[in-house]
Image (cartoon, rainbow, N blue to C red; front, side, top):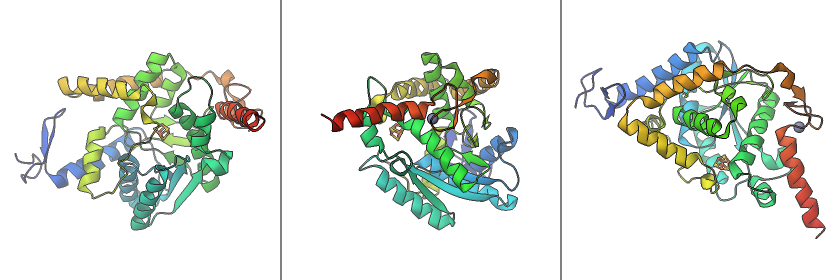
Length: 310
Ligand code: SF4
Ligand code: ZN
């Protein structure tokens, strides 16, 4: 099998396009795709201070590597931001992996922890949660805010997260099944600093298949964390992932066309400007009197008081 670009030995067959690619042409094709996504949706501007959320997984480390390469001619400054949720036995290794790559690439690395920001680790929050609320939904609410606080403190212009095409499709289907139309709006390639976030958010890997990111990480010798989070299987996401993967197997390219539909739908959902308020507790943007972060913290801290008085 020969590479269709250079004739060297191909190592990868891209089923949705029919391309057969060698190691080097495959890696260049990924960087080119990211470049195209950035310019198609105008994700980054010349000279932007870019905060890159790095978790220690294959996606975020790949994003950091590619943005580091692409940002050089644009005099953009990059900051790597890691959120330490406080998941014992899991996050410690990830932070070490992030440190290694940021040192290799000479990128400043900042760690912000839930414990410092909220006086509460995720492990504690999970222990004290109420009802059926999943670990990932508490984690997601607190992490989105933590990233906003980090971005504000570091004064970055834009926050880049490593969501890939598969993540975005799964989120789209989950929100569709939950009837959560407002969150479908967040799939817009650029989330402007508006009701939900302070800093503009972009996802430069949004058009890259997850399996191609794994391949890119291996081919570039990127060490990433392979252990999964202990709370990972609580939500419906794993089932949706398997369903979408099975569809792609039978119909190569269906992920890509569904992504395009999801983006167009997200761009046609209007923001109700009346929804935007400031939370009376923390003064961050919110759709109600109390933002989702303060609601989560209020419930959990009430349970701490209750526990201490038993
Ligand atoms: Fe947080 Fe869920 Fe991800 Fe674990 S799997 S880090 S709980 S969002
Ligand atoms: Zn609040």
